[in-house]
Image 1: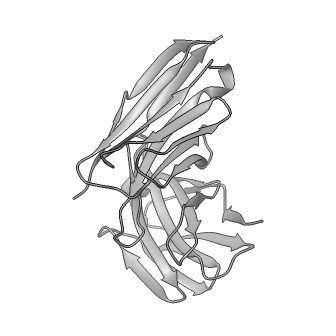
Image 2: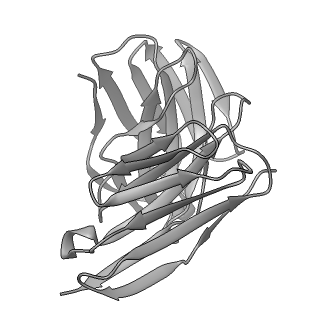
Length: 113
Length: 111
C-alpha cells in the first residue's frame, strides 16, 4: 500500500531564516505530487505541483520554491522566511495517468516568529 | 477562476442527529471528493464520486454527485463525537488534474 511522509512535523523558525520541508511517498512510482498551505482560516491553497522529476509548476507567486530531486521526493524551500509563511503545509500525491484522487500526508506546522 | 461554495461553514449538533453539507461550483466537474480533517492532521479521503448522479456510501456517510455536475452533498447519519472535524469538498475537471477545494464545514458534536 502507499504511504506518504512529511518531515518535520512541527517547526519554529525566525524571520529571515531558510526553510526546507520534505515529503516522501512509498509504494507507488511516478506519482503527481502537490504542496498545499492551510492558513488558520482553513482553506487549502495549492502552492506547487509536479508531474515528474525536475518538473515543477507554481500556482501562486510567493517566497517559496519547490524541487523534486527524486521520483518520490518533494521538497518545499525558502531562502528567507517571512511572518506570512506561517501555516500548516500539506503534501499530497495522486496517480499520474490519469490524474487521480489526492491523498494527503500528515502535514508540517510552521511557525515563523 | 473556478470556485467552490461549501455550506454551512460550521455546524453545532447533538450526538445522534443527522448532518448534511453541500458544495456548489460555478462550472462543471468530472470528479467530486469529500475529505475529513482532524485537528493537526492531514485531510483523509472519505468518499470519491466519478459519475453524475452517483450515490455512494461509506458507513454512516453518504455522498452524491449532482446531476448537473455542479454540486455535491455529504450526509452523516446518527452523528457521534468522533465525527468532529472539518469536512472539505473538492472537485476536479479535466484541466491538469488539480483539485479545487471548498472552504470547509466545521462540525461540532455535543455528547
